Structures are given as structure tokens and as C-alpha cells.
Length: 257
Length: 117
Image (cartoon, rainbow over all chains, first blue to last red; front, side, top):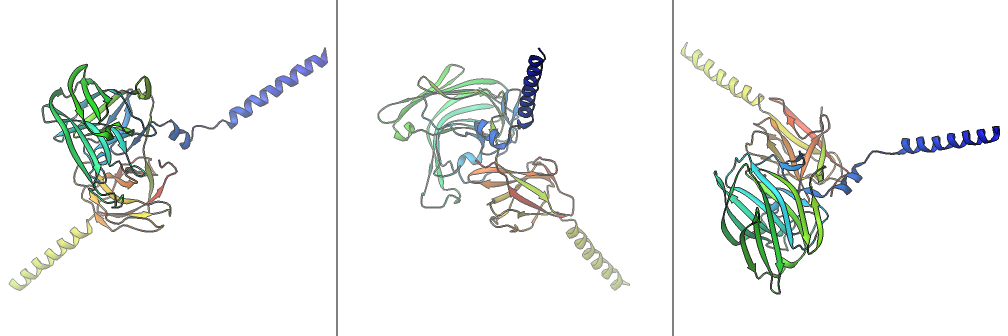
């Protein structure tokens, strides 16, 4: 009997030791773990997560002129590169300060290296002091591939289509962009709160290429929520911003004495 | 008497110029690590005023940018990192907010973080 009690005691002690060593050796998430969990790269701007939304608060852009997305306040998908058939998100615009107010919902975002996103398509919303007034489809392309990546203004922005579109500031909207590929290009359709704004067929084969996605703004504070991107029946990306999924490139600094 | 008056005026003017130069606030950046390439470093004022841009790209350890006069003393530093905007985070307060002392000449040493892409 004493042997059994002793055996049970020793096993309990052994189990306790294993449990405590595991707890001691458990490490908090390190930077590498945080990188793995990130869904977005903060390409530019001041982005925070507040009340389950991604909000941009710098409002004013910094004109770096390496590529157009860097001249906005931009979040770019970090790892997801895909073709898509549907992109949906909720967004709102507040604190309008610099006009025109401009918003980009970008797709097919590509770079030859690092984050030089010369090439992309986007639905662009433009507004004045009163409201958003125009919805367009734009394309950005690198001008001269022989110039170094650090060359400035080496890209061209082309407006492919434009349409009147009235959206109020200080209100939340659901935006949906669908893309239907065809033999020569694709048809891009924009919906705001389920109301079709435009549907435009564009004979550009590059529309069918996979790329990253980006949300960009300047002139106003944008809040973003429930971003979902589908390619057919497959959900290739989604984020409800219930946690911080934004990776911010940083350097550290110390003031010299 | 008149000569003495004019001399005092001239001396006063020189004195005012010298004092105003002493009140100038300056900022520069220094590379503290050899594996960091920081280009297009900028001082972005919190007030929304014009950015101050540094022309020198820092590639080598110990390299410094030029001095730039800063009129808006509250702001943040940014640099270009491979086509993305890099925030300069101050070790003391772990934020990007910097408050420069009026009339000072300040140097901030920057170094790369492990988190890049």
C-alpha cells in the first residue's frame, strides 16, 4: 500500500515538474511571430486599429514619388497575391481636410522588387469639400524599367473610366468590386450599398494577372472594416480587424548626447 | 554723438542677428548600423507644415546626413525602406513623436530593426 502511495506521489511530482517547466519555457510572441500574423503592410500613413476597425489618422500624404501608393496613406496585403472575382469592405470617411479627397481600392498590385508597387489597377473615389463626387478606374504602370528602383516619378497614372458618384462624408458604406475576366480583359463592376455605380468592360489583359490588394486614402481619415476578397468560391483574404494585423516597417533611433 | 549713436545701432543689429542664429533649431541623422540603408529621410511636422527633406542616403555605419534647420519642432522622422515608408521610432518613449529643443542642434542615430518585410 505504501508502495502504491509512494508511486502515485512520485508520478504526481513528476507531472507537476513537467507542467511547470513548460510554463517557464513558454515565451511570449516575438517579432517573428507578429510578422507571421500580420495581414497588411503599412506602406505609408498612420494606421491604427480602433474598435475593430483600421483607421488612418495622418490624413495628409507624404509625396515620396517612388510609386503612387506611397503618395497616399496605404495598407497593402502582405502575403496574399491573387486574382479575384469579388472584393467587399465597409468604409467611412471623416475629418476631411485636404481636397480633393482621394480613395483607392487597388487590385493587381505588383512590384519588381520589395515594395515598389508601380503596377496596379484601382477603383478611385474623388471628393470635394461636400462629398465624394466621382468614381473612376485607374491604372498605374512603371514608365522605364531600365531606371533604378529608386528613380522618382518613374510611373504613369491613367484614368480608364470615370463616372459621377455621390457619397457622403461621415457615413459608413459597403463597397463591392467584382471582376469578371473575359478573353481580352475583364469587366469591373462597382457597387455601393448594393447599388450598382458602374460596370465597365476593359480590354486590358493585365487585369487578369494576380497581384496584391491595397486600400489607400489622402485628404481624409478613412476607416476600414470587414475586408473580404474572393476568387470564385474561394476566400483568398479576409480581415475584420478584431486584432492588430498591420505590420509597420520601422527603424529605431537614439538621441545622441 | 551722432557717430556713437550710429555705432550703437549697428552693434545692436549685429547682436540681434547673432542671437537669432543662436536660436536656430537643427536636426541631422546618423546611421548606427551597417546593414541599414535609409534613403529620403524626412522630418514630417505634426502641425502639417512642409516636410524637411534630407538628400543624403545613409548606407554605412557612422554616416551622417546634412544639418537641416527645423522650424516646426514637433514631428516625426520617416525614411524610405524599399518602397515603403519606414517610421523612425525613438527608443526613449517607443513612439515616433519627437520634440526638439528650441535652439538646439540634435543628432539621432538610427539603426535597422529585425522586422523588415
